[in-house]
Image 1 (tube, rainbow, N blue to C red):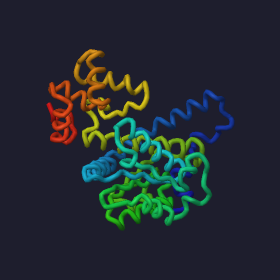
Image 2 (image 1 turned 90 degrees about the horizontal axis):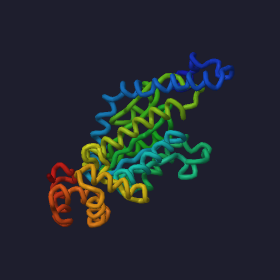
Image 3 (image 1 turned 120 degrees about the vertical axis):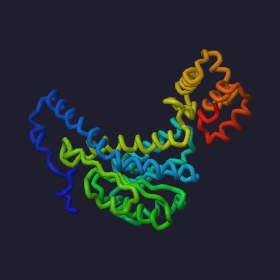
Image 4 (image 1 turned 60 degrees about the vertical axis):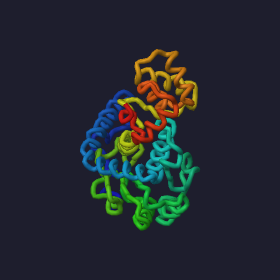
Amino acid sequence: MDLEKLTTERRNQETMNLDELTVKEALIKMNLEDQKVALAVKEALPQIEPAVDAIIDAFKKGGRLIYMGAGTSGRLGVLDAAECVPTFGVEPEMVQGLIAGGQKAMTIAVEGAEDSKEFGKADLVEINLTDKDIVVGIAASGRTPYVIGGLTYATSVGAATASVACNKDAEISRYALFPIEVDAGPEFLTGSTRLKSGTAQKLILNMLSTVSMIGIGKVYNNLMVDVKATNEKLVERSKRIIMEATSCDYPTAETYFVNADENVKLAIVMLLTNSSKEEAEAKLIQGNHFIKNTI
């Protein structure tokens, strides 16, 4: 697909005079453009749902969620993966973000890295991709060779595949079992896909990781009960979560948090079922780690 045919590369007729606008006018126009993003993602919900189901299936098999992309797309994947660790208490290996050019590409563009299909394959080989895993390729243009190489290799080893593109009829969609395409229109600043395209990708990745974690019991009601208390703020949040989930007071929440070795979910089950730590652990295993299955 030629670049000029991509929505993400077209000029936005609503913003042709950016260099003549006041700051206020530019901000208003940018905000109006951004409002189109969530509505565009809404149109893609029927494509996002089966991708989430596939991620849940991968997790239940002991598999991993692997994001891969270049530039902004790759950075967003790395960000979403990193935030799963404290939010859902998972090991860093369970959700991973791969970016063309490696870790240094998070802050400095690596020349030509995204243009190699072989680099995409090599990065998956390095993490020992298996048929239990799912690979989600992310590319605003929908045509990044690094991502296509990764999806092609993932298919060859029997891993599930999904893709996120910000153009319709994207090339990467042909390499994914679960393609997701969203069209939020031309960018506010021509070709700057860190803007609306990046926002659309962030919204979709939020959905993929958060709803799949809900699907494996990482949430009770709307509480992040597997949060890792890695700092003082999260220690206090953990106690508040215990209070909210069990209607106990602060001293009780603090006591159970300590007795459960700072495992919020375990503390909640201990309180709700009047169980010892060992009994609560057994209940969670039997209930597939869903709190509501233990009550």
